[in-house]
Image (cartoon, one colour):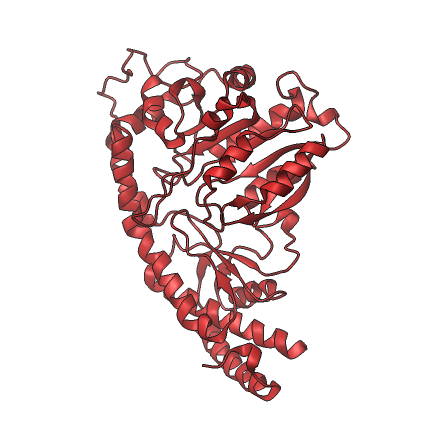
Length: 426
């Protein structure tokens, strides 16, 4: 099969007619498929249904210390759930606070605290003339939305297979004290699926920043969400920062949202004792204690970290074939034509796809008009602006394999059509 870039204008016009007819055939099928978010499939949620029976009204709702989990208190979270979840971040239980049901909520609250009360006695960010954040791209749209909400200026940082461009990060934070933080998804990043190298983690831990209140927002959302038998490991940045006396530089976040039930999981933050003591002052105002019964429910269901890892093997068995189906179709349909590039992640929830420059918005629109909803083009960049208009986040987890095959066949057709249209413009 001839690559599109080698086709004559006449050949491109013939292909456009062929692809347009195939597209019309898809439209006639009146598909209704949604791949816009990385949601667990119903079969994944079914795995956790027995958790709802882990506690009953006849159970003794006390933890291992004898604490009555039905009552007020214990801001940090019960000790058993710390034992269960601390290995997810690789931290000690003393460096961990168990919160409510959403890590996004904790990230938002942590940012809010910086704006209203400052960081470790520093000036509240709301009183500063300008606040900037570094944003590895492509990245997570909900991180960017928090910055947009607070009017933070976002600076794009190219993301490589080993992590953000650290030469650029180190230079910027050393010279500009209005740069207050950086968003990071260190393992199986959203959407590329890249994992930070050991060197990248050490360089983050050793950052020399002009702003004393600079913080790394380290969102380890996919730390145990493996898709292959090769389980990638990323060093514990808090430990690395402690080694160089820089432990205050990082906040670590995670949750069980895609492990147990989204919206009903358990979230956590790990940080230095100084950071945690400061944040807990605000937490103590907004709550007397988080949902300890839900914490106990998770402990009774998973029992220990090994039980949690075995549960994730069941998740992998459901979603890995979906990722493989998508990757197989992309290779089959697009590689011979020489159009598009994509990642083959070893974990996480997404595949990052790059169209030819200037085609992403067109592809997303074509798919939507044929009944397949994708994440909006540009969503993986701050303010929704992809300067090259090429990145699209593919979320394979929710649809069935058969639905995915249909959706990705349409997606490939739309990429072909958009690419031909772009070549004909030149």
